[in-house]
Length: 440
Ligand code: 5AD
Ligand code: SF4
Figure 1 (cartoon, rainbow, N blue to C red):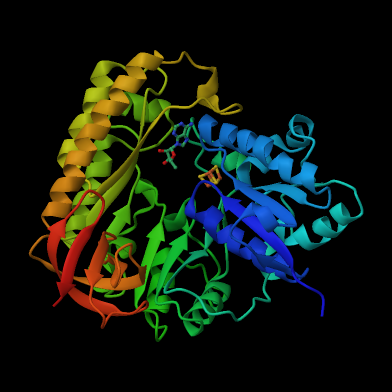
Figure 2 (tube, helix red, strand yellow):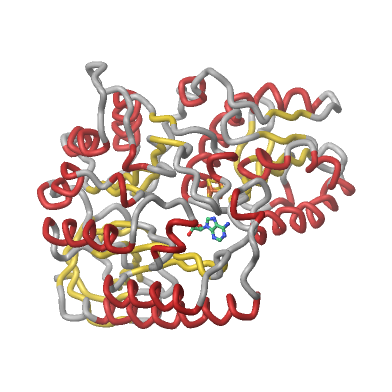
């Protein structure tokens, strides 16, 4: 028996990258690789990268600078770069960091086995194609290893919306939806392996329009209803959505589908109509608020989450105030805010930039407001009974941690609880980033 080679993958960026890393590990599993938790004993080191903001991309180059020492110590070690930086920078990565053997984009990683074999001959391998074939079809054979209770499942990829700040249409390509039958097969397989909660992923997940099981045009709502009928699957989530694609049937599903969790990530980016227009968002602050009203009418206890960009070109103090006002109105359970980062090749990159100190100041003010809202919503959970899917042991002895239906992390210390259980928990305390409680 040959000893397995070791693969270390470090994942940056979004949840889709987490999913892609799992699939890459599976693909390389066929080449005799086993995953390891550290680069120290790895035969292959793979960075699955993110290009969404400048900092994310720069982190990759500094990490590569550190990793080249592993190769200096052992020339048999291979270093690969996958993901969105690989797509955006291509061969430039190998020029900037000659220790890199392999560069593979998000749409061609089903070719990793051949690419890995090529690097073993001493050559470098580069593939940033948007191939015709469906990578997921090529990656179909999956090992039957047991899984934790939660999983991501990519149903849609890419984006046709072209927000003026965003690299995704260039790194992930045009919108593509997977056929519903493939998704349902994958979901059943995950459930057989122990998964109880699936988060459907897509850069524009609610614009999902794959082929239905009978070949008809399908929607995300229809897919959710099919998943609702999968025995053993208890919870369904989806992310990330665009406000313009929140259809009536999807909103209705939030009110009627018991397995669909009461949490929705719906980025708005800004509260100023002037800025929204310049971002090419094709919605207004008002239309966004109307969508949320409809969602809350269907599911009054839903916890909303969002994304914001401050310091977008030409954002004035008044525009920023409109963002603060919108946040005040919505009351987010979670919100992610970012300082605008110029991305080469995007329309906004050519425009006059906002003063850095001003952007920093706005980011801080927005984050202060968001943290206060998050804390208030978390605090409001104290005394309530929520349903928790337990995932893993917590830091303290005997403690287990899981997620409530609202996606809050919940700690419980009780020997009756094991990973994979779903239990009613009475919330007794609210900490900085999590809740604590006892079995109800
Ligand atoms: N600068 C700052 N933030 C960005 N995002 C996307 N592109 C940029 C950029 N150029 C943010 C948006 C998006 C989230 C994933 O990242 O808020 O919703
Ligand atoms: Fe980053 Fe966007 Fe690529 Fe995800 S899709 S890794 S967020 S650039």
